Length: 481
Image (cartoon, rainbow, N blue to C red; front, top):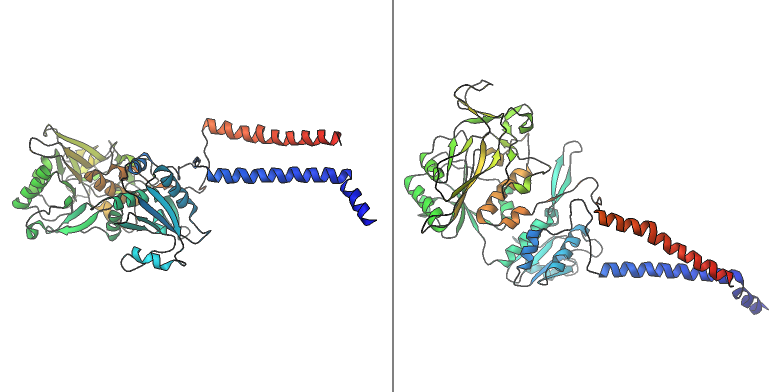
């Protein structure tokens, strides 16, 4: 009796309709699962974020295309707790180059494997990325992937930009190389040391930073790639001048001179700069254009950026370069034919320069200079017969490296100095890779015209059409039952 009722239930119209609807629903859900799996498996992806967080720059692609040896990238994550942004970017690296392989390691489950990646006696932390070529490796910590800014209102640090690409590409360059370029900070003339944070940033760019007293060292070492002199209080002596000039001309050297307007005259250094078509003019630059100085601080410049490899990546940045207390860098009209001189930071045409820096006057006198002025410049000497190409960078102030406490840390200032160092050594790929700004809407989508119509078509035509087709099929099926 009960079996007959159950058989009639199975053969009933309600059961047929309900079973068919359940079958269609299950089939549609299965289709969605298949599409999701295939979409994840396919290599094709598109980056719809405003800042292109997951799009490799042309410079990174050139680095990857030039790789000659295999490199392993290891993400130290617990399962399910990966940094999605970093991992998605790493997948772009791997899809670009067959020389790269990506793997993951849970440090809690495989502690022994981390022993070979110890730095200064410490094992890599959870969330770090290891780039390893077999002979060399570099560990990138999770917090280094982002730049942070201090919010005075909330008294908290907030993420300002995503800088993973520059760090990862730099690490790939590091493990691919056999040696690192050395920056020598000149000593013996009352120079000012650079901040530890800046040293660490230069190490990220694969530099080795050392001190050098030319006199006691008996000359400039063979491994010197760049000489840097910051705020010297004493001039170079004649022997040092000759050695630096020989280093630049004969050895294709590079140098940066970060000078202050309060420094005494340095005739020997002035002779060296003049050979590159540059001259320092001891006069304090003052701005009158409101957009080019901090409020109520006309000596604290916000200079305009020229169109140069050093400054171009910084144009349109969230924070400007702040340049306190600078003298004039004059680009001389008479220079050697093979010397190219270019301004880097320039004041407005309303600026002026005060010759008497002890004066209390707020208006220019007949002795003062009218702007605009260059406060930082770069020069390249292609070299005469028997000489190699050399480069120098000169800034009219050093306080941009040591901003007052009321201004605080200035990431764009540091980026400018790092760009100068990378331009001097010829590493343009690290200059052009800039951090991606992170707005409040972190993954806001932006679409091209083609993408807009594609997604609109899917949403307005394809998906509704699919459901309409299913509805018609169900209707016709019911009519024949």
